[in-house]
Length: 68
Image (cartoon, rainbow, N blue to C red):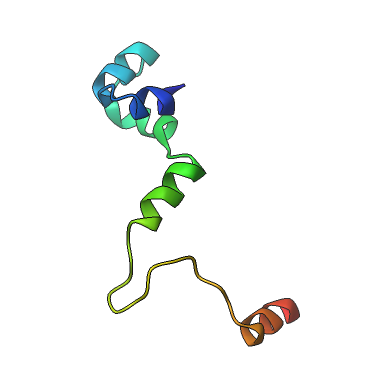
């Protein structure tokens, strides 16, 4: 619910009051971004010198990881 309120534009301090939290800092736990929001934000960023898009590990890396 807190995440939906934040996405709807409700201020964090108001959400903290509605949830009965002592401070905005304790509300932070309830406002952890869901995976869709995180993926959307990451899609808008690129590493310096990198190309946009989702990382795909090559076969050598995947083979190594399977041996762990």
